[in-house]
Length: 192
Image 1 (tube, rainbow, N blue to C red):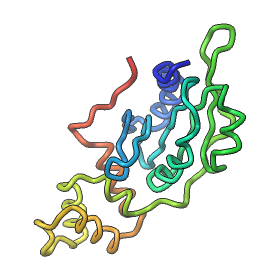
Image 2 (cartoon, rainbow, N blue to C red; image 1 turned 60 degrees about the vertical axis):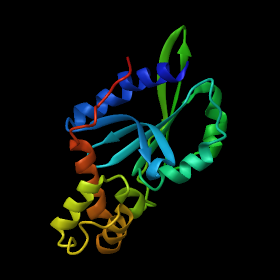
Image 3 (tube, rainbow, N blue to C red; image 1 turned 90 degrees about the horizontal axis):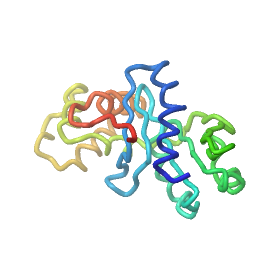
Image 4 (cartoon, rainbow, N blue to C red; image 1 turned 90 degrees about the vertical axis):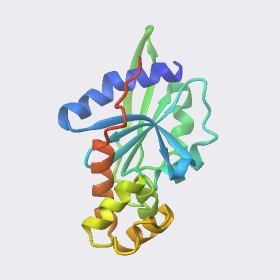
């Protein structure tokens, strides 16, 4: 199965279950993280951030270690969706807090089987979360908590630094999830 096939299967199996349980969820393909240093294949955003990394039959797992480091800073839950040819190696490589779904073909039909579900990631990074906010969103958060004095014209990195120094990770995460879920200029997309 190629990446598009795996993504389509994810949208036919996992995503509908999530949307049924949490209709206010937004799904974003190719979400950029860490100021462009990383990109997750599918991000599911509701009161948590859940990322899905796809490894199709034509992929390899060489970048997985670096991706784990990046994703653990942002996603409370993370799932590797791996073609059956990668499963043996993926079981050895993915952290136990990640979920693992195997995909492939049985009798010519696509299937997706969960090997284990994701657990809560306790290693979130407040700066990485704050960097998901656009400038106006950062200013809105700072204004809400009374942190805006003298900051309106400061560079984004100063805004993020103030946010991370002044707010708890839970406060940042809640606002980030809300803003990412409700952004008007983002399109919730599904594969064609």
